[in-house]
Image (cartoon, rainbow, N blue to C red):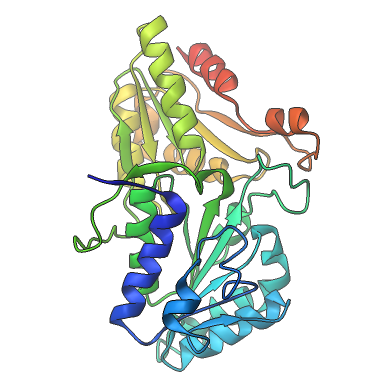
Length: 327
């Protein structure tokens, strides 16, 4: 199977579906001629034209409001928020309008929009361009939340998100854009259903529950400890935070008896607490041989200094130390 980048996989997903379905449009700041802040939409303006790839004013609230209205009237809008931090400026339309519409009108309408946004640290973009806001939006009934970790998952999950009748917040961690992985040829169409986790490494000694760019870090730490200590660590990529594949988590924890939850966002109030709570509320709790452990980011704004920035989120060294302490 060919290997392409995460960014290329996202572009293919959008372009392939736009060729099939004229209802799909792309809106955002610099998504047209410039090709997107991270180059994800490069070439799409030339192929689909200004009527379907729309450069917008610098107003996240207006972009999201336009998308909510377009979705309500039958289009399938994809919007790109240049940095996930700027979701804060779109919250009124996303939360009070898009997420509520189907409930407010008794299911008579739907809001099938996808809000794409790059997030996470690691690029030296400092405190206002490096946050991980997944816990904010996961708390809102009516929104679905997706964070893929590989090019294969990014393409399959984005295709599924485009046709989901609910608003989907599709978070893309920036350091993954240039990573490569196997993806089927364009003619080999596939989707990945929302709400299905993936076991990225089988093991029997401990379960790591994670998502996004922490997945490759956890896999690397697990492989290193397998070689040096003989530990057999399972890595579960939840892929979609809402809906959450609870059964996959329970099955893994019951098998291993130990659970480490790893995520980049600040630990306090982070999505890892929700995962821990779900496991503690289930019969999987009675299979645990040690307390559930969370390893999240530090409770500080992301610093500009690259050396400090690298230490704010879970590193491979911290992940290895947490695994060893649980075993």
